[in-house]
Structures are given as structure tokens and as C-alpha cells.
Image (cartoon, rainbow, N blue to C red; front, side, top):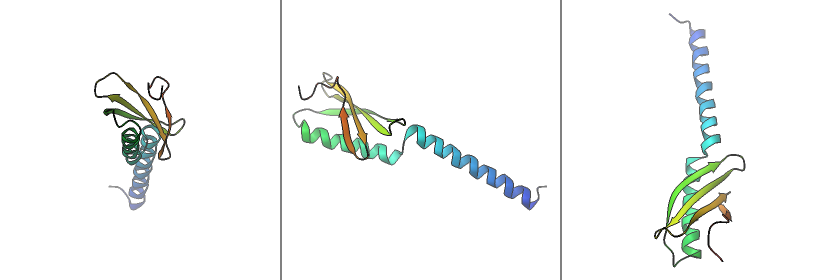
Length: 102
């Protein structure tokens, strides 16, 4: 049905499509392992800097333009919420509307 050369070309195209799909996914969504690491970094940061508060992480998003993970947190009582930005394994900003350190 297909010659060996035809099968090799078809397999090469399939591998190329899979690699490109993976690249696009990681570019738009970030590395899943780094997302988990960002979640851990924020959890540790909040426990160390705000031990009197209790927080829940509701979302971890990736912003490919700057290569940062945006971690959204909300206090257990629902009165405080905001974002912490993580890049290269460290927190770079707390969002302005995050009512800490006032």
C-alpha cells in the first residue's frame, strides 16, 4: 500500500505536528511542573509573611509575554484577595489591590 519512503515521510510529518503542538501548548500555558512550583512558592511565602491569615489558591495562570505565573489567592474569610506574580522561582510582585503591608 505505502512504500517505506512514504511511511517515513508520513511518520516524520506526524512527529513534527506533535512537536509543534507541544511547543504551542507550553508557550501558551506554561510548564505544568513550573505551575506547581509557583503554587508551592506562593503557599510558603504566605505562611511566612502572613501567618495570622489563611489563604486558598484559586488559580495559577501563565502570562507568556513576560514569562510569569500569576497566582490568584483569596483569604478563607473572603475579605482579601489578589494576585502574586512568580518568575524564575521567586515572587516578583504582589498586585496593587492586594491589601497587605498597608
